[in-house]
Structures are given as C-alpha cells and as structure tokens.
Image (cartoon, rainbow, N blue to C red; front, side, top):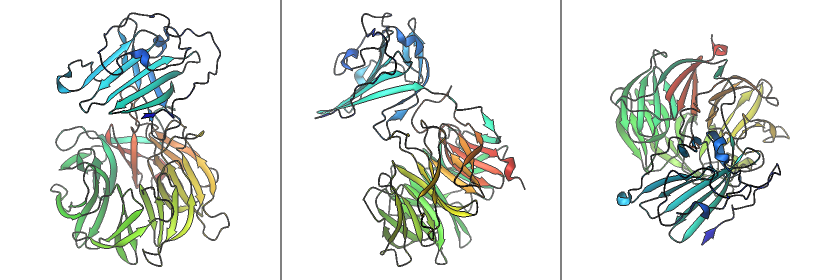
Length: 498
C-alpha cells in the first residue's frame, strides 16, 4: 500500500529558469549504501532546484508538511562543497550494519540526502534542495514492511523572534538532577520551598528556597509527564503521570529527600488536574480516551475512585482539562474543546459549549479584565493560520455570546503553545521555541504581549518539534519554567513585585 496523499506539486512564488540537478555542483564526499532508498534521486524534488544552491542552506530552518498536524521540526544544517553538507547535531555517519542500523548522508551541492535503516527493517530517507525564492523543498520517504509513506516538505529560515528578554529577568537555573545527569524538564509544580520537576528520566525534587541557586535534593526514577501536589493527613504527595507505564503513581514527598511510592492508581494518565469539589479533594485523569476518572484524594496515601465521566461528543481522547466546580473543560484533541456540567452526577454530563480545534491541548477558565473568560491553547499546525495559537472565549454562561471567540493571540505561526497560567490580568505562556510570553488581558478582546524571555537557543538546540519552554508556574513574582533542553529556569517578573 502507498500512502501518498501528502505528495503535492510545489507552487513557485518566483518564476526563474530551472537549473535542476543537471550534473554535480560539487563532488559528493561520501558513497551510498546499497538497498532500499539508496539512490538520492529516488526522492522526487522540484525541477527548479537551484544548481549548487546548498551553499545557502547552512543555518536554522522551520520544516513542515502543512497538511499534517504534527509533522514539523527546526533543523539546523551546516557544511559546504569542501566539507559536504549535513544536518547539525546528527550522529556521525554509520555504515556498519552489524547492529542492524545504518545512517548515511550525501550531497552534491544541489541535493542533500540522508538515509537511515533501522534494526526493525524500516528504512527512511530525506532529500532537500534550495528553491529560487530562498526556501527549502524536501521529501521524506519511509518504507516499512509493504507500506511506503511519502511526505512533501517545505522549509523557510527560522531564528529567534526577538531579543533575549524584555520585562523578565533570569534569577536562577538548574540543568542537572541529583545524580548529576542532564535534566529535560516537562512539567513543574512548586510547593513551598520545593519544585517538583517531571522529566524524561524521573521526578526531580529541587530546593528552591534560594531561587538564585536551586539545588536538586532527590531523584525518583520513572519518566514523568505531569505532576500534581496534594496535601492531606499531614502528608505531601506527588501524583505523577507516567511515560511507558499504564498506571498513575502517588509518591510521598513529605520528606523531599526520600520520595517513596505509597499508592498506584490502575489507570493510565497523560495529565492530571487537582481541584476541590463538593468539599473534597479530587484528582481527575486525562487518559487519552473520552473517559475521565475522578478520585477522592482527601487522604492522599489512599486514593478512592469516585467514578468516571464521559466527555460529550465525538470520541477523540482527552489530553488535558480544567475543572471549575461542577464544570469541566476538556481538551479533546482533534474533537475540540468541550465544556460540560456534572452537577447532576458524573454519569449525566451536560454539554455547555464546544469549539472545533486543530488539536485541543490545554485550557483555563478564569476572570480577566473583570469578565469571565475561557482560554484555549492549540498545538497543531494544519490550516492556513498554522493552527497553534491562543483563543480567548467569552466565559459568561448568561451571555448570548458564551463560548464564542473574543480574540486570539499568536506569537508566530511556526511555533505552538504548550501550557499557561493566568495571574490577575497577566497570562504566562510556555511557548516552546518562543520561550515564556506574557500577555496582558486587561481587555480580553484586545490581548497585548507585554514581556518575554527566550529560553530556546537556536545555536545549540537539536531542532526537534517540541523543544523549549513547556510549563510555567508563577509563585509571587517568580516564574518557574520547565524547559526540555535546560531543565528548570527561575525568572522574575518585576510587575508582580509586592
């Protein structure tokens, strides 16, 4: 079977004479391996690739397939005719197939090509060339078993949006965990003098009593995507969502230097939401299904299942949610954001509102500028506007315009939103490659960016899709930022100073 719906003609903005691939612009520095996708000319590129155009390729790019929700990256290329061209930060060429995997790069000055053969038997390859208008054209092909997947790519130069910082100041930073290993921050929760950082390797407990010099005090092994801190019965417990595990753990961190597993919820969760409802302490699980389990964690060492509610509407899979009393705002990925009421019981959800989205990722219901609002963050990239932006919705249920869009904010269409927190009228957004962005919502219909701090370094970042600032938590005038390349950063917003 051949999946080639994404293969489409490239429309040129500037009509220039086509030079194509007629003869090498420079001698290839490497020989190719035999086997599937071994011929760099097997991957179709436009006829008007600029002859010798790769001399203009070194630098950072935004490469994407605009028809695919999550096919995008930020690669950096380097090289010359003299040295050969390659993707920066890629592993060295590996022609030894004894371990079942090989990686080869090749270029002739007009066409760049790389090919990977995996131990699973899959083979993938990419080819790029420069077009007369200064953009990249590319093709990605993967062969696995009897299937062949093809994707047409486009690229344009990419770099920092603006200067390093405006209005925010870096106070402290920690890039290694208690074992001395590099930390890749995903989620952060701050409780008292400690920050709990979910990372790709575990839960990191960090003493932040001196923000300028944070210190890692313990490391609990187990990749952690989300963290919720719960208090009860004199204990402090971190509930954590896993990577690669089907259960949700409760870790006693009453002694931050000796975290211990005390309970295991037999449900997978991608994210968690802790709230007070009906006088109790509740934990809600986003399971990537339309079912949302609810647990009573008033006694955090012994969580008790209350029940499960189902998100009204199409089945898609809840990524995250915001709970406000009996109202749940579910981020139902490709089925959009759904607001519903469970005052009649978890088994009787009543839909209040719905918006279609590219990929509903996160939401907050609050008050800004003296009026109720619902804030929605999208993470997908399909559509003419890029898809990934902040929507500001009318949150007043008594209003005839309830759940309609008041305004939107987008840093730029090449970067997606991860998470955010509203403090007063200031919205703090963890904006991946655009770092932390602060938006003034004193007038929700007219959002204004008022401060930022760029955490992502285009000179050193490998260039994956989901890099940079992932989560923010504001405590006083400090902003705690989990960054998947830098670990934990602590910023200060002077506008929040008492």
